[in-house]
Amino acid sequence: MSLTLVLDDATRPDEGVERQRIDRVAAFDEVDRRVHVGSGVIAERYQRDVRAVAARDPPQRLDPRSGLARPGDHVGTQRERDVVDAHPGRIGAMPQLTGAEVERIFREAGAVRDGHFVLASGRHSGRYLEKFQVLQRPRETEKLAGAIASWARGRDVATVAGPTTGGIILAHEVARQLGTRAVYAERGELGGREFRRGFSLAPGERVLVVDDIMSTGGSVHETIAAVRATGATVLGAAVLVDRSGGEATLDVPLYALWRLEIPTYGVGCPLCAAGAPLEHPGTTPAPTVAAR
Image (tube, rainbow, N blue to C red; front, side, top):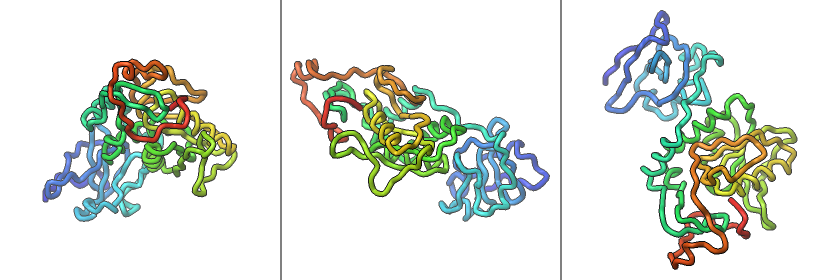
């Protein structure tokens, strides 16, 4: 076991502390927060910001239940006294991911596929983004959701809502990082989406809608409509990828981590005309060829 430095009460939190490793395991989770730490706490610094805090006791640091500091909740260690203070005005936001960084995550996960696909909207496309190849990876999902949570902070989000299926994972992780709850909108028997399983929203409740891939915006529109049907307020929407090239529009602020244009086709699909084999990946297509 190697231990470089333990801060005492007289140590300034912005003084450099090297990364610790215990039995070849990193002692810190990567976070972007400025905090004041006291005795019995190990801290990691990056460019004069404390990026992580952990309990002094090595076994506690390796215990997944120890609750190291993460975006969304400043209480970083199991013992309250280990975090002396956290000034809201000094908490730094998680750096926003660039579109190139999000594309890299998708490509490295094998999520960018070429061929002839039918999308959840019923429209056809020559390229498909298999988000579950990314969402199966907790660390990448946490990073992507963290960028959305960073954008949403300060908007007084009470609840995060996502459409089934990929929106469940994303809504849950964004809500976890924001310290709120998550609800899920399922396809209704007569079309559109609705909240089942006892989910309820109060009139005026401030809701953030999230989804994975947006082609024409149908799933997001349907989820927004389901939220508004309860009397709650939609304060914005966020997606991992907007593949519409800006064609999909909403009547609320929209944040997309990665924007690109991938053509989709209805009647007269050139891929169909060329006889390319058709694949049906992912979600069962919606009843109409309207939107996602």
